[in-house]
Amino acid sequence: MRRSPDSVLSRSIAAIVGGYAVSNLVAIAFATALPMVQAEAVMTSMMLSFLFYALAAIWAFSAKTAMLGWAGMIVTGLIALLIWGAYSLAESLV
Amino acid sequence: MSFRHSMTWLHTWSGLVLGWLLYFMFVTGSTGYFDEEILRWMQPEIPLQESSISASEFIETAERRLDQVATNATETYIELPLGRSPFFSIWWHEAATPETGPRGLWHNEKLNPNTGKPVITRETEGGEFLYRLHYALHYIPGWLAYALTSLAAMFMLVAIISGVIIHRRIFKDFFSFRRNKQRSWLDLHNLFGVLPLPFHLMITYSGLVLLMFSTMLPVPASSYGVGEGLRAIYDEVFTEHESRSAAGVSINSKPTVSLYKDALKRSDGGLINYVAIKHPGDKNAVIEMGVLADEGIDQHKPIHYDGVSGELYEPEEDPSKHSSAKSFYDTMEILHEGLFARPLLRWLYFLSGLMGAGMMATGSLLWAVNRRKKHTVSAGGVRGLALVDRLNLGTIVGLPIAIAAYFWANRLLAVDLVSRANWEMNSLFIVWGIALLHPFLRWKKTSLENLWCEQLLFATTVYALIPVLNAATSEHHLGKALLHGDWVMAGFDLFMLVLAMCFAITAHKLRRRIPILGTANSAAGVSA
Image (cartoon, rainbow over all chains, first blue to last red; front, side, top):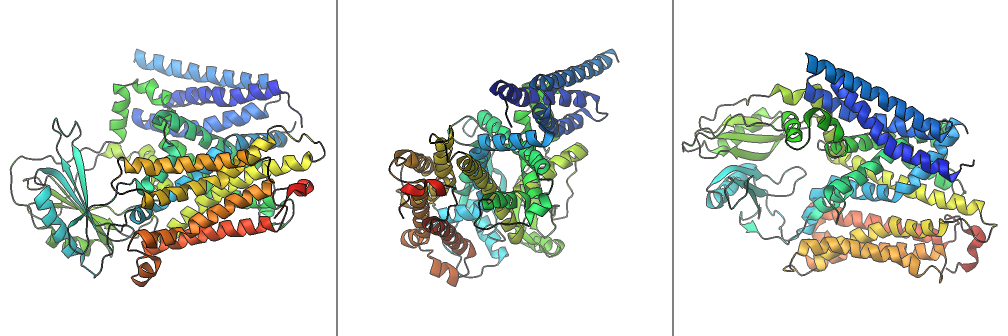
């Protein structure tokens, strides 16, 4: 089993830093979208965030290439941002 | 590369990178399940309770003392020497003034259970210090420690998930133990990892959840903002508001002892382990009796009385403190800390924690053994292997030696030493530093097996001598403790002997040149 050092470094950064960013973004999207009292939605999303983080890390290392790992995270992060934005916008309109 | 292969790779490297920190967290965290017992050993000034004194007598004695010292208290608290807690102590809270600070000040006195007079104990942080190490570390700011320990826990969570994926035959492997073969480290690693797997998963995840307000800050900040906003969500979720505040009208409170007897009847066979009074001497005084009952995770609710009439009193409950998310969080906290655990379960918690430490230790050893096996032919060996070998020894055996040093310092440092508790803690890290240096200093002079033997025999000695140290520096020697059924003191000494025996057995195996470190092919330098 051989891995180029570049790929390993890239995947590690994707898992640790990218995973942290993406799990926070997804949790924030959940916190705004979950139909619960605000404090409860925030608590629930925070407790779920660790599962998102673990999944992101595993994804970073199991994707075919390091670039694909990054791409998956960026797309997920963007979707989370969109959901967060849409709900925040809807709330400010109401 | 297949999914399983990449998971194997991830498991190996993520385990190695934070393996030592996780070993440290498992060892120090496990001691937390016996923090009160460790504190009791570290405060030998507290005498043994010589005759059986009834709880009502304890309460009356404690109240007499509180009448003397806690005249302006806003809250008083009597802890009875029952159940797990061997302490008979009183606490009282002084209201916030410029001198006592914005939150007021808690005072604590330990009482002699025979005379009711306060006992002056040596300054020590006891088991609390060891317990705090596992998430707050030491010498570095809290936020950094939380980030590091949470990152390690996150690696652990990923390692558990990827470990389960590697072991498709996890349960078949679990029942195979190949003694004295090259694979026995792997089998042992699997045993320590799989047998308490539910514990590992629970302790890792709940540990992450307990620190989430520091580590996952962006999530609450996105809805509440930072600073004041964060305090708002914390208040909303956690702060229990007092249901009754002081009226400012003085009146004599109902004697607590008669209420104690009433509470005992209502406790379903449980014991009353504390008596607290909110606003003592006020018209709105509330008396609270803590119930220690066998109810599993759901702790028995304390029984409340109106302090003046002595009638039962139900404080209003705030429904927002009982949302499902909050209940889940509370359950995670109770599970993590084992707050409900009676002796048998407490030991299981402790042993599961030690198995976690064993899993990390065998994992790190396995990393080194596997690489040595593959590269015995090439003279240069693997890059980093020598470093891992040395750090493995200095951590796996060095940390227990350092913890022993903490106990030794507790008894050997002068009782009136300035910042004594700090020096006890520094002793741990100074000795650990020496244990980490030892393999580096003697690396060229002797074999890896011999280095292990040296530290293991040293560990055996320092642990075996702890009961002797206890006999020499306190009146609680093992014989007396056993004779009086003082199980906290005796249990501590006996467990130190058990640990000494474990180190001795391991050293003995190494001396018989069983190639457990995988150095069989390069055994030229071994001299036993």
